[in-house]
Length: 90
Image (cartoon, rainbow, N blue to C red; front, side):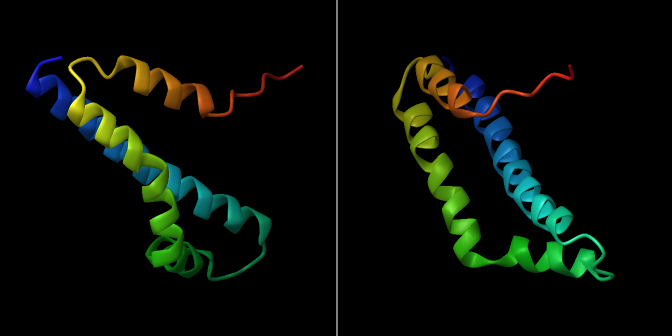
């Protein structure tokens, strides 16, 4: 994998990391539906250093694997395999 490809893949992973964190916060908001100031709750959760640190730990190993590998496809596939599959409607 070329350096520019690694940078693009890393950018995708950074965006995914942010969306993962945002999704966690939104799930908490849904659990607490009816709260009038939900946006403040979302902002607070996203700025929570402990929660942010936990999310970063999830992605740290994958970033390191991409940096040290000539072909980080296996690391990416292993990560994607841990993501829950979307449930289909029956």
